[in-house]
Image (tube, rainbow, N blue to C red; front, side, top):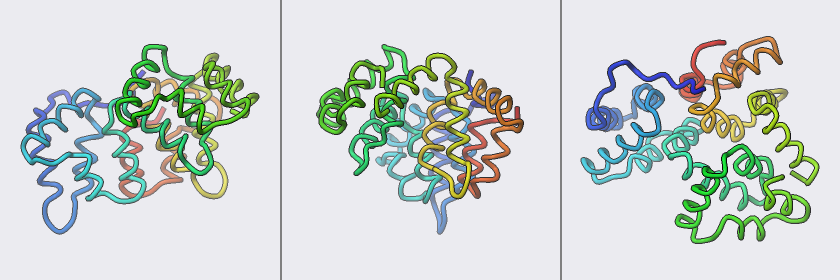
Length: 244
């Protein structure tokens, strides 16, 4: 179940586009206003806003946000603007082409999606990067992990299989544990934190929050508040919603 909160009366995409354009004007971006608008719009509404923005201002909203926002909030918001198949394709591409392949990210993309979602992601991946996802998995991964992902049974082989089993048996608890690991100890794994919160908000973040509370005895929002700051914190908390 989604944790996205949408206002009872939603402005038109054109109105939102105008407000966003005003937020970008002047000496500094009104990041709070950008967050207030976009963190309370669903995937269809975000798509329409982007279309209106490009029509009215001859500029991609994603490019303007990339110019105006900075740091982790920029990364999180940029990922949020994608529709799910394009987002998964981007995550997969980045996971495969980093100096050290991000096995966990690519495994999650393959193993926590339905067959139809994977099929659509593969289509977007091919049209965007002009290479088949399966081919890039073949080229960029090796050994047991390659075999595992190709069979959609995926980490090193043992780690990958565990990921699949955990996702299949209790996806909410799996993601709750990964979120905890992202924030536990010295430093925060912001890349992982962003990936999970952004990709799960409109799917099952409600269940993830419940699982997190049951496992760790405190709300997910408590740890996010402690480990993040500023506009980045505000954006993630808007997506997660109220305390469980």
